[in-house]
Image (cartoon, rainbow, N blue to C red; front, side, top):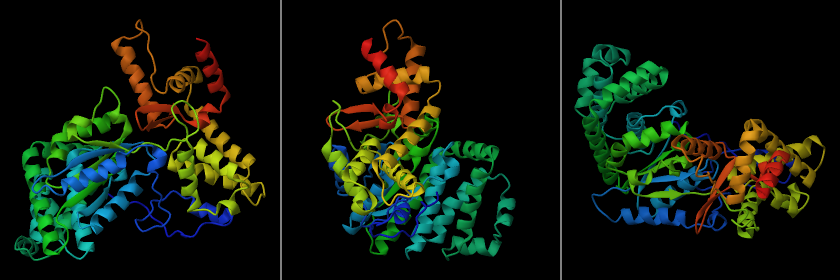
Length: 468
C-alpha cells in the first residue's frame, strides 16, 4: 500500500493567482502543516470527537483491541484528519500509529488476505525507517508462510529472490537480512500482476484462513514488543486508509462482509476507512466492527434550505490559510459563493476555486470575480450533465431527493423487490459520483450537489415535482 503523494508546497498564503494555483493542488497536508483546519462546527456533528474518545478509551483496556469503520464521501478530508489524529495520539503517548494506503491496483478488487500481506510489509518497512526494525526471524515466519501457501514451487521463489541456504539459515536465527522484504515484494507483485495469479493466491490462502490469522497476529505481537523495547507506546494503531476508493460497492461490501471476522480479529487497534455507500440499506457495516464513525460534508445549508453560516465560515477560514483572500478575490461574496457551491466538500471547494482562478487568469483579470466564479460552477454543472444521462431518468429523481432530502418515495404499487433494489442501486450510484451529498448532525439527510441545482434540466424537473 503505497504512501500518499505529497509535494513541497509553500505554507504562506498565496497573494496572486499564480501562487494560488500551487496552493489549490489536491494534496494531503502533513500533521504539522499550519494550513490544516478543523471543520467540526461547520459539519454540525460530534462524530470526530466520538472517534477520538473511542480510541482513547480503548487504550485504557489491556489485552483488548479496538476496531472501527470510518466512513464518508471522498473529498471530505478523512485522510488529512486521520494523519493529524495519529500525530496527536502519538504525542500523548497513547498509540504508535502506522498509516497504510490501499494500493491503487486493488481499488477494483481487494481481499482481506491482500490487506494482511501489505500490512505486514508496511509495518516492517515503517519500523525500519523509524529506527526500531522488527526481527528478521519474526518477519520471515509470516513471509515464508505466505510464500509456501501461495507459490507451489518453493525452489522457484527461493531462486528468484536470490535466497541461498546460508541466507535462509541466518534469517531463521534472527540475524537481520533483507530476504523477507524481497519475498513480500515478490508476493505483492504477483497479486497485482495478473488476475489469474491473484485468484490462485487468494484461493490458496483462504484454505488456511485460521492459520493466516495466527501468523499475522504473532507478527503483530512481535511488533508491539519491538515498540515496548524501543520505549514507544506499545498500542499499535493501524489506520487502513483509502478503502473508500474500492469500486463498485459490491466489491467493497464483499471485502468487509466475507472478511469482516478476519479483519476484526487481529491483535492491533485498527481504523478501517470504508465507502459511505456501505452505510446505505440493505448493507450495514455496523455489525461487522460494532463502531462506525462518519465524516459528513460541511453543511453550507441546513435541511430546511436556510443558510448555515457556521459551515460557510469554516470553509472560508480553510481557504484563508491557503490564500490571501483580499489579494486573490474581488470580494468576500465571491469567496462565500464558491464555498456554498462546493456543497461542503473540501476537495470540491479546492477544485472550484482552482478553476475560478484559472478562468480569471486567462481573462487577464488580477483577481477572481463573480463572473469567473460562476464560470467555474457552470463547468462543473456541465460535467454533471454529461454524467447524468439520460436526463429524463436522472433529473426527476434528483429533484425528488432535493425536495425530500433523501426520503425518496416509491409508490406501493411500484414497491416490488426488483424496483426497491433498483432504487437502492441508483441512489448508491448518485452518492458514489457525488451528485448527491450526505450531511448529518441531529439526523442524517442528503441533498443534490449545488452545481446540479443550478442547471435548467434540474429546475424543470423540480418544477414538475413540486406540481405533482
